[in-house]
Amino acid sequence: GIVIDTASKQEGTTHFVILLSAYILTLSKWKKSEDIVLGTVLNDRLHNEWRDVVGPMIKMLPFRIVVDPKETISAFMRRVNSMLNAVYKHKDYPLTNLTQRLYPTHNAGQNPLFDTVFVYQNQMTPSASPGFGASIQYKNHYKNHVIQADIQYYEKSSANFSLFVNIYKQENNRYSYTVNCNPNVIDQDDIRYFAYQFHAMLRIMCISRDSTVDKLLLGS
Image 1 (cartoon, rainbow, N blue to C red):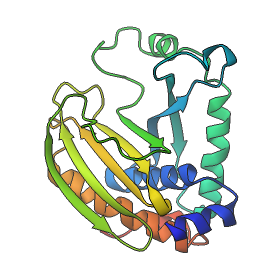
Image 2: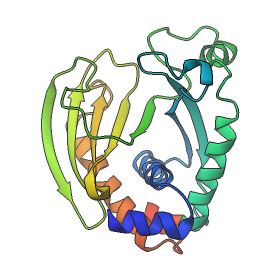
Image 3: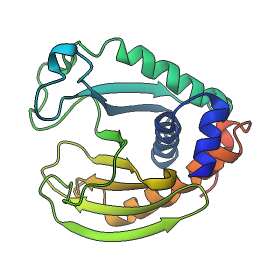
């Protein structure tokens, strides 16, 4: 937690941007692709007329970025932050309109824009299972000097997304996260690999920000 906080202050960015950057690079390494598209969630309670409305007010936003292997980690995080700000400017454009415009004949049960979602929540992990009604399959504990987290894997074959990650801020800048998967696409071995790579990526990013991205994408 201290290392993430230090990196955040030195880079002048948020924990969310650092975690999202690590997630993007993990996906890039995992899928061997530099073109990454994902969904993220914006708290839409910013409109004055909705602040007193009961219930969650969130909006799903698509986010696309092309990873530049020769870019430094520090520059990559700054670009992620800049692109997030650009995406937020279009938050009021209905996602359904964009989907219909680009994919007029898509399957209603799937999102054709992205199949992975990353959500950062500045709150403790909820005690209830967040797996969209799915049952927990296993729980592993991972720890290093950057992040200490419990990863929980949930399966639901009818999930709209292949991979849905909720990350929660805990006390002392520690984090825990849950992973919801479509087992027809991602199995438990994949998630174990993802968790190992995500933690390793986050650790290296925080302590070696002058290194280039390609050094993180190499290796096992």
